[in-house]
Length: 200
Image (cartoon, rainbow, N blue to C red; front, side):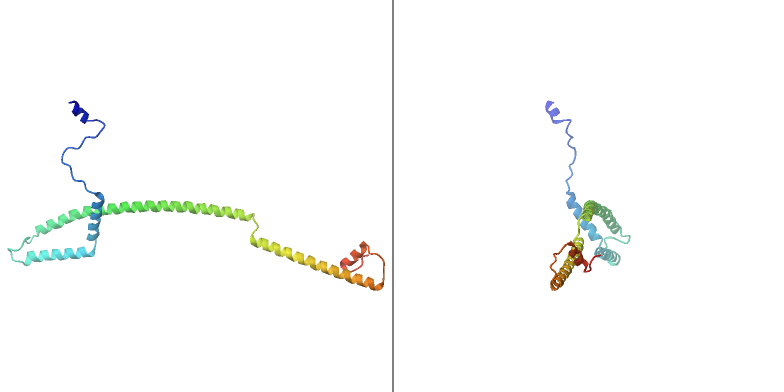
């Protein structure tokens, strides 16, 4: 009695009593059903089935009465077609369910990838916007070129003015040297040489 109580534990489910059915591999059976559904959905199956039914009708109509296995009402043919339909419908439904499962997994994967791509796109958009804001405060290459070109023009103009001024001063000193004036130069001489005319 104590051994029986030990064997019957309340925290474990009971073993099912009765006949144990063989276990069927669902994946193998599903692939098999998909193969059947795929072959039944082709034109070859329809042609072969039409040929078999035509031969069945022809044999049971034109053959001698002793050789006919399914006379005129074709009861056996009706039974065969009913069995075929009764097995074909669940097999096709099973194949459709497996295809629906695959489509659902593919849809979830597509949705996950689309979410990741959207997140990546938003991140890149934020980075580009940040770079544009940062570039607004930084001198660009074109701006530096224009500034350097303007500075070079100003330096060229200043050098030309300096050369003109030196030339005028040399001409003045040559004119003074020719007259023989020995008076020392003062600040007014620079003013005179600035524009080439004496100031009032």
